Amino acid sequence: MLYAPRTPVVPAHGRVGWTALALIVAGTGCGVPAGTPADQTVAAVPSDQGTLCRRIDIALAHARDARLLDAGVQGAWQVVHGILAFGPEFPLATRAATAPALSYLLDGGALVGWKLRPGNPGVIAIVEEGSTMGQGHPDQWLGYLSQCGVAESGDRLVEGIPLDTPLTVGGRRFTIADLLAQAQHDIRPGQEATWTLMALSAWLPHDAAWTSGDGERWTTERVVEMEAGADIASAACGGAHRLYGLAAAVDAHRRATGGPPTGAWAEAAAVLDDSIERARRFQQPDGTFSVHAFERPATSPEVFARLSATGHVFEVLALALDDQRLREPWVRRAADRLVTLLEQTSDLDVECGALYHAAHGLAIYRRRTCAGSTTKPPPDTDQAQATPLRFQPPSPNR
Image 1 (cartoon, rainbow, N blue to C red):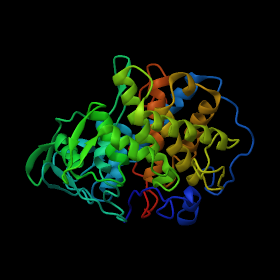
Image 2: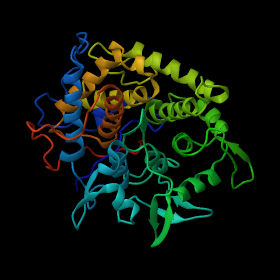
Image 3: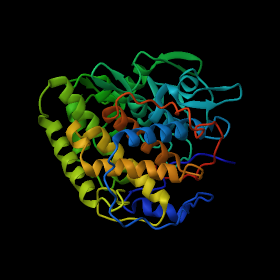
């Protein structure tokens, strides 16, 4: 069976980082072999932003359309990651036809790993730790739906889908708000709340308060404080997802208040600043980020390890950095190298977590730095023809 896997970071604590990926999987057929050592020459800063933006457009169109997922082969984990990157535009091959994956799932379409059931007071998304197809973390589906796609509305980015979006579960009609209500009801002290925080920051006021199912009083700020105080290096994918959740929270607070972060959001901003500086210091000469993410500098001879690490770190930067910092030379070098890695692996089996987090980061970066960009392929390229490609096998840690 062919399937599109998740990010192989071993062990589950995430400390080994993406170098372990090379020991698990290896692709073939690329013009640049998977085992080619990383380029240790210092990468030049791209001089033509327009050319970089056009390359991003082509790479994103290829990732969206040429690597067509199949509902009879891939699972929810893979498909939801594609939805994260491309939102309602992400296609999925079903028995009937190729259709928007988001609509297919929300309308009750069958997919291995998409396990929802009516709960109290909302809808429960089943967590399947170690599964190769299902939700691996609390509120992972909810968090990614809150961040999926990148659209423009006035002078700011808008991600995610409305809370009143219909959701069919067991033949009954609900909305995305029912998933959020259940997440608020089920939250507990000390839990992994990375994806919960993404959703809270996207859909609720920054000063929202509620009572959980065990009678405890919660606020969005309390969740921010809990995540900001949790360990980064031991979190999933080198801490990239936890940092993204904190970045979403800080961004939402700044937009709501019009001022600098305060309280727990200031603590989150400090964690982000420290991690961003680590990413900058640990950046490799070729523009990739460390395969040990925010923990220490390192590279790998495996192109897949470099793609996964760079894509995950870049996704955080694309959201967390302000407009001025996003245009700094080291970030542009990273964007250029990330596109190059996608180009080098365009005809290789790849890993879904690496691919779609890289694509999501580039989509955010493109919307913030490339005027008038589109994910539609230019007329002189056929890279985005819908020729299904294989994907690397899954790992328990994603």
